[in-house]
Image (cartoon, rainbow over all chains, first blue to last red):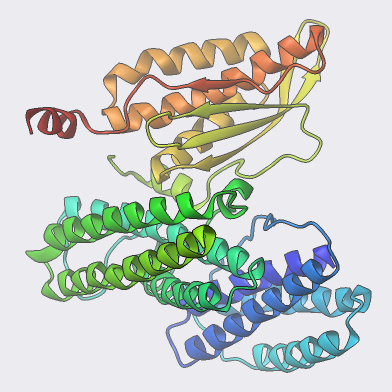
Amino acid sequence: MKTLMIKTHEAWLEMLMAGFMSKTQNKQVLFDFSDILFRHFTWLENELIALDVTYNYDRDTIPIKVERLSDLLNNIVKRLDVIDLQLLSSPDKELDARIASDIHYMREVLKNMNDEVVTAFSMERVFPGISLTQEATDALTLFLFEETYKEYELIMIYNYLKAHSNDAYMNRIFQILIDESFFHLKSFGDMGAKMGILAVPRVVMKELYQVEDVVQFLKDGIDEELAAKEECKRLAEAVAKDSFELAKFFDFINHQENYHIALMKDALKHFTGEANG
Amino acid sequence: MNMDAQLIEHMMNPKNYGTLEGADVQGIGKNPENGEKVAIYLRVGKDEDQPYVEDIRFQAIGCTTTVVAGSMLTEEAKGLNFNGIKNLVDATIKLLDKLPSEDAACSEMVALAIKAAVDTYEKRQEDPDYPIITYKIVNSCVPKEEMKQDEEE
């Protein structure tokens, strides 16, 4: 069961990376499939929790550097085959049947997908249609590496907290934060692919998501969101003279952090109120 | 951080990232200022002379610069005997003055984590229950100009 969850985690990320690499109508299909695999991952996680099995979010490195999309899609199909076999070891046969049905369909779609040349690893660091100074390019590069990982980290943290909470109010907040982080992850991953610097986020250390003090985590989280706003503001300023469009995008992301701060303040109020009450 | 192709390659594909199955020992480097840390995992081999790093992995709670420093230093550490590791740590620490403070803090954290792993290994030769050593860095992650500004405010 644990292996099944790890393999599903890897397949989810690999599918997401394939979505970033695509420049055609394949992209949305690959994103939708990666969303489905993420949901499989949460189903399997909930099953592990129900069975009282200890687990973590460790996984193997996922090699994604390919020249053609079909190379990666073939790898994903192999990974889906492994998951299909692993499903036999799972005790919840109804869940297995649901997952197997999705996997069989995805496998067929992937096998018939039109091939594409992949430029997501060119390392050219040129944003299509925009000419940035070296300084702005470096700032954007660093931002994309930092924030792509950060959004993945947040998804894993909120997902773990949600999986271990029966509080509907908190879970609503965690789910919105997961959804928001997914939007940011997809935005930054897409930009990374366009710049030729696409990379799989590194594995998150256990102590980050196995949160012992939720109140402190939320307080630190609010501070981090405030710092992220400043980072977006700095980046918007750095690219403003070269690209109005990019500057506006980072202003938009900056203002989106206000939702996260409001949600985390709400969660903090609810959690401390409940803890004190 | 000045970015060349080698640096970007370390960002895209950090070498030796993750935990190490069958690791003999672990060491921690920590930034007390902000809670960032680096964990080093070593598998230690033994030749006639002295122990050496058979395999090494690292994990980080930190920024991209820390990951790049971890990727570079663990690559250099692989295969070195413990004297070589001590020289690598010393050479890294000596270079820190030449780096911007935030880069220095990241490199110091990795170097001290490697030192902590080696020291823990040596302590455990006498006391197998010796706890994992954590070394704290002295460099600040905050750029000097920002520190100066904060002091003036």
